[in-house]
Image (cartoon, rainbow, N blue to C red; front, side, top):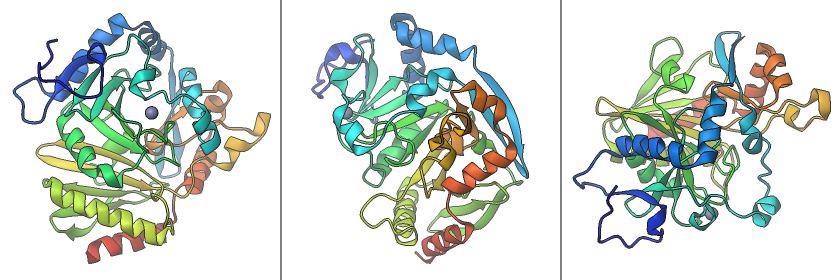
Length: 341
Ligand SMILES: [Zn+2]
């Protein structure tokens, strides 16, 4: 892959599989990501191993009253699920997303000199990417809303972009990053598209707002063909969440998924009250290693321990979701505040 000669971003050339620029005449970012994956799965043994281990994961559907989730037994995810994300542990470890600390074989696609698309070597999906900022800057959605929408559009039609807040699922809360998964692979993407759970609430400034009904956890769905209006509505949603959830000093806890298709953005926001459920902190037999982030709260629940994969039932799953999500009346207040503009 040839690189632009005018390249001057803070990433060494040998790290770059390709450089992508807004408006440039080139392959789509979506296609470049696929090519990156094809190349890295030949040249990078750790990724080869991670992808091969996916062939041994098991999945099991669990009915939780009116909704279902899919459990994935994936031992390769133990590092992420069991990651210590408290400030002390984070301060003491070497940041694994900083470009200088990446494994020698790892390369990426540099996007507009700011974000680097990288293959995730401990995948949940066959093609699973981390889209990481080139600088060590804290995880923060509000400052990166335009990037969220832009990257989701550029990664279409193959991928969905998602975001985990620094206190609810990001295993590098000190380094700004998104992730990308094959479009439609997270169950909520389908569930939020058809009528069964989706309840349309209204429209505000060219953005259609809906919530999810009988879904076991609270979600707000935004649809629009206009990235500026959608960005403004999302900013309003974050400030409403800040007020309702009383998170004045820090970003309200949330997971966000965003995809783009048929000229429209679809964004799913899960407001959160808590990162890990009580059972995560139990001892031995009572412990259930489930650490919900965007993929899990989206309906694909990762269980790196076999005992949990076999033992988790609908009642416990519903309880875990209830514990880490917000109460329905809080969602209603947030939506009312968004609609008031
Ligand atoms: Zn870093």
